[in-house]
Amino acid sequence: MSNQRLPDDNCASRRRWLQSTSGWLGSAALASLCASQATRADEPASRPLAANMLPHFAPRAKRVIYLFQSGGPSQLDLFDPKPKLRELAGKDLPDSIRQGQRLTAMTSRQASFPIAASKYRFAQHGQSGAWLSEQLPHTAQQADQICFVKAVHTEAINHDPAITFLQTGAQLAGRPSIGSWLSYGLGSENQDLPGFVVLVSQGSGNVTDQPLYDRLWASGFLPSKHQGVKFRAGGDPVLFLSNPAGVTRAIRRQELDDLQQLNRLQEQQQGDPEIAARIAQYELAFRMQTAVPELVDISAETKQVREQYGPEVERPGSYAYHCLLARRLVERGVRFVQLFHRGWDQHVTLPKQLEAQCRDTDQPTAALLADLKQRGLLEDTLVVWGGEFGRTVYCQGPLSADDYGRDHHPRCFTVWLAGGGVKPGVSFGQTDDFSYNVVDGGVHVHDLHATLLHLLGVDHTRLTFKFQGRNFRLTDVHGRVIRELLA
Image (tube, rainbow, N blue to C red; front, side, top):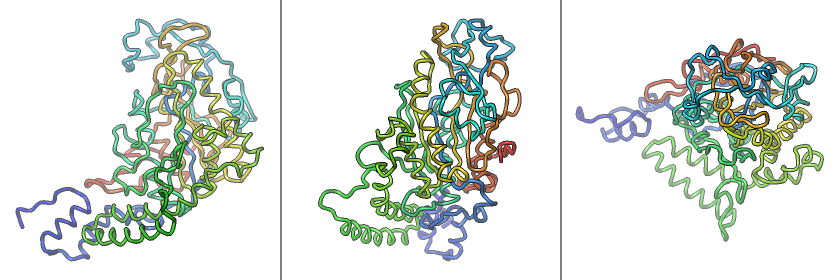
């Protein structure tokens, strides 16, 4: 036996190794060995053992709608007005501002970095006096519901690592997404729907924007039942949800019962927790066969509600449709709804593309906030709006008074929050006169994650999962709760 080795650090392989050694460790010891690594994937709430039962304290929010604007919206043209830039338009960005900071490969060889002032007018709105661009007239009407976080900063300068960082707390792929962490920690309030749902829409701006990979809503090393379930725009909302022709619901039920017996036998032999996760997923899919068709049928909504979200709401797969669907999902107890809207990567022809993106998103976003509030859901539903980074003050490509492009800018950008225990009607953080560096109230991505978890009653330092000998968490070894954002 001394020549035998443990093949890898996971529960299933340990069980197989122990079986091969004639079971010299008893089942009690084996249970102790595996308990620290994973809970049973078929437990109703899927609560982590290390978290001492969640929530850790009274939550302000019960659920999240994350409106992720993929590509990097320009804070300079939407939320962070810098009127003095008009006097400097076309002049080179001072070295004292850039301070030798890194550039992307797309602009690093430019001979100059001419300042591009925003072409849009800004005005203050609501009692809070929040500044918003003329491109966001509907969002402006909700200004007093929103907390604008104007000095968010990140570490990645390119799309894929930056999006991965916002979604998982790490730039390298493989970690669990924030939705998976919350599904793992808090479970779902509806046993007929997933705890984590993903909706992806294509914007009208940059139609060749960066792709979005399914790993962005994956569960990483958490049990696979906590990965996001992507709803599609056409056909079955979820792949293979409908029964094939000739297969009745009774037949499907019998098939699942028989399959479950086989899977239970396999689970007893191998002890792989992923088998239990697969059983749970099969059962969830069976229940979803009746829950999902009713969920995605928005004809039950009144004409007034549908019109509130704008004309695109009738088109499945549009951002407007997804905003309404997000409200219907959280209304039914889904813990985390993630919308991804592509098209915000404006390296060239920014005005044309940005205006198209705002037409896609402004009215539906504002309607979602108003709809949630009218139904009494905004109070305990946290809404997040933002991308993976911001845009540069200097122009990429040709510059004119009415046309310009902007490169990626990780050093400061705007994310806004609403509902769910957030302090409404405030703007937190400040950037310099070029919206290039943080001056006051900087919020790192890890800080943002820690604050979101706190609003849901979760201590970000205690929601952990042991993997490969280390306790991992969403915020890694960083993050602080930004208490100035809390109501």
